[in-house]
Image 1 (cartoon, rainbow, N blue to C red):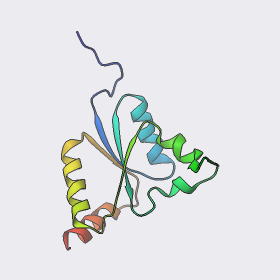
Image 2: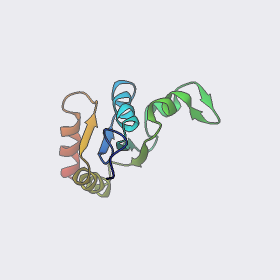
Image 3: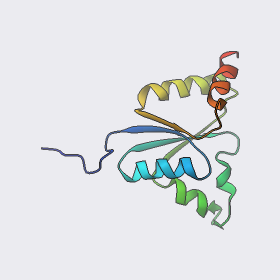
Image 4: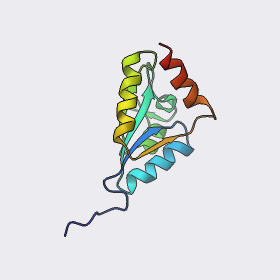
Length: 114
């Protein structure tokens, strides 16, 4: 019988998080076996990519909080990006975000008017 190795094996997570709490949550989910897709916004991606300490052009802080995740950097000002996000949402089991209340709703509202 083929038993999962980790408690979250087979789960897919869409990660709209930045800075500490959200990325730590999804990092723990990755360590428990979940496949994490981190959504970053163009043009610069997650702001912590520029946090010190830098080594070989990479932020140790960013790597520490986002290891084991796949990332996609999109420009939400483009309708195709919004369609891509909607498609990804249909394919995941969990969506994690740590924005202030209403930010996701405003993003969706703004994009739907384009």
